[in-house]
Length: 193
Image (tube, rainbow, N blue to C red):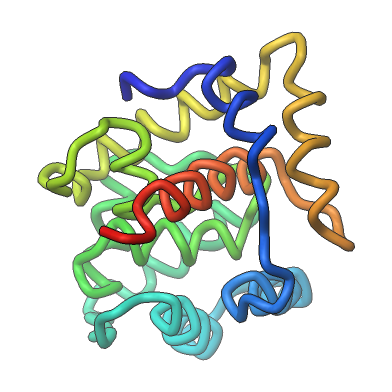
């Protein structure tokens, strides 16, 4: 994650421009609200949530619900604020298309304060690599979450957050602010690629 530094993020926040008509941005708060209104995540919510998460992805979802009880237990732990282990993430990943990217999106909507979205644009921003080799490792995702937590501890973090927040009519979490900044910066840098 050679490119992840508070200074790089703050510089990129200066140039952040969002299109409020982007369906990606419009659907975001609806997905957050869906899980906010659920006390206990059940199979029904997993199926619906996984499918709307995959609406943001170019692949079709295939759910493997062999370990549904564990998956639901871990999702409810995530909802209550627990940071899941690599092994727990691997079990959810296996259920959701065997994808840590899909898993990260679902976890983010379940608990946006603890979990950030992880995808190829974020990976490219962080590593500078064109290839996404290694993106689907739970360990890489855990390292990413830990790195974002460290960014949030920076003395001037609130300045960065405010630069991103000003683009929204609703409150966004710190995890979302950092992730969105990296995503949009990569999208703008690579729009012709």
